[in-house]
Amino acid sequence: MIQRVVCAISGGVDSAVSAAILKKKGFEVIGVYMNNWDFVEEGENHCPRTLDETDAQRICTALDIKYYRVDFVKEYWNGVFERFLDGYRAGKTLVADVECNALIKFEALHRFSIDSLGVDAVATGHYAQNSLGNFLENTKKGAIPHLLTAVDPLKDQTYFLSRISENQLRRSMFPIGDQIKSNVKKMAVEMGLNEVAEKKESMGLCYVGKRRKFSEFLEKYIPDKKGNLVDIETAEVIGEHNGIHHFTIGKRVAINTNYPTHYGFYVCKIDSCSNIVYLKIQLERPHWINGSPIEGDLEFRCQRQHPTLQCSLEDDILTSKTPLRAAAPGQNCVFYRENVCLGSAEITDILEPIK
Image (tube, rainbow, N blue to C red; front, side, top):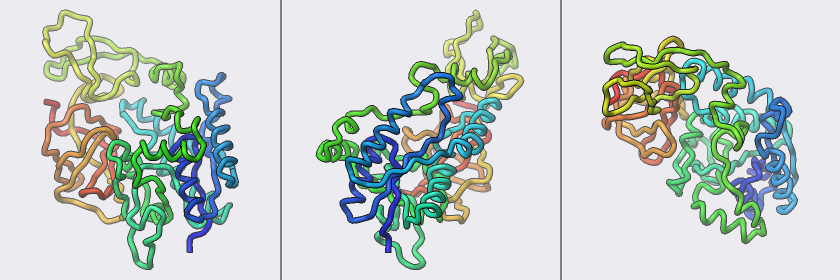
């Protein structure tokens, strides 16, 4: 029987309401704030992380639940951030949140919560659902958990959860998976957490901060290196760039030249020598949440905000039934059947040129 539950507390409205719902249902709730980035290394405070931590403490005090702070700086740097930098050095567009969920929130946090705090389950404020019930109420011997899409399609976060494992899902609760965002904010106000309800959502990489462009942040870790911009059709050099980490697949590039074109140029493929452009989707070692490889007709998306598209999958090669634009090596391609998130794979290459 599930009694003790850790709820990850970020300082935002979703995790606050998740913890409140858990307490209302009678669970013994422990709030845990994760510190994943060392801002001393930045030299100045680019991100209001200390404010988030203060908000997390206030939320736990308001809900009268225990509060813990845990550091996963080393795990995040080694498992997520270094891979993220390696991807950008190679011209790939990686999604750090996907790796963060798999390695930090659903691995390191689960391990800490179970081994150190002795809890039975771990909850997060993600907009997703569990086939075992969002509170694991349908758990029974032999039952296999499946990751399901959230009730609110605009907030569904299964894209970012597509690399968690079946074992992780077996002990994961999603208290707001059956709620829409407006209801969650309303519940926060009713709980007296007005400031949290009105707080802006954190989007993207917190450690980049509001005062810097993403390219400026990368420059701290990846030095500029000039290279050529090449027309894939003619192999002609038509411009120069300052570093491949400034580009992502699908990005429109302005060419300061009299080169004849009415359409402009889009980046299609990047290598460390010469930004040559192709579009090809080939999947290597897909991660299937429930273990078994899946082929046949599926749905997929390459970005969270995009609608799912029909596709077929055979021998790790995905064939989209709809023309694609801006699919990028390094992006996370997530597979679905109806409302079940099956897993994902990193896009490694594109087989057909962009139309």
